[in-house]
Image (cartoon, rainbow, N blue to C red; front, side, top):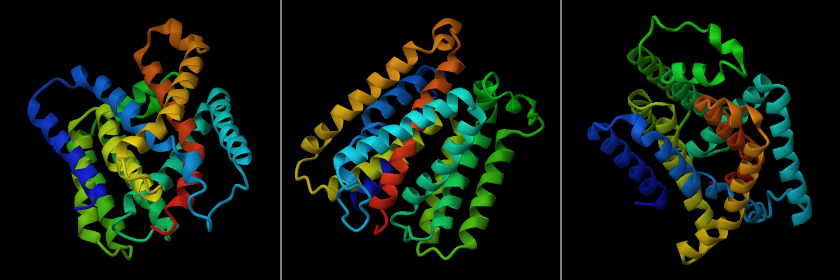
Length: 292
């Protein structure tokens, strides 16, 4: 059993434990989300400055200065986009995330060369996540993106959205030439069951942490040929800490969050930070996984 499979099984075991624990989601969802993001989510992108130079065939940066200039410019661009045009910011985040999440998900089941397949698989996952948590998302986006307020899906329950998600996934996988269709379908269907049982924060934490970030962290560990995982993980800490500090500074300058006591605004802010870190990360990982 390889490290990627083990990481995904760890997430599955945790999900099953949470389902059968009977604990109210509100008691652990925020804590779980923060722990996953700080220990796995952000660190898996904190070695981009090393990963960008691993594959000579895909290398787009002549030196580290060019890398940092482009990387930080993309982060700044995304922050400004969310500030001035939040709907467009959300659209960009969804488009790049669909491709990136699908590209990472397909590893081990098929080649990542089919870019359309990568996008469609990622779109399936995000669609299922959103459909099964549509009320949470409407609440979070109602002030900054009021277009979501008018969505009335009260006639449909969670079971309906779960079935729709599974059917769309099945149609997608059947219509693509995928080497390992059944295992891929099984894994994502189990993931959809998690989306059905848990709220948005827990669902995203389980998926992003154990189906995406941890497997990619294992790939990075192998690519950098480090014999000791702890030493490798220590290399992620400087940029993980820097990301947290930058996020805190943005938080301090955001008067809406500081004065509103609105938990939904805080969640939106966290996702803006995630999307800003994701935008440059997507381009680095696209080169990194092209031969996986």
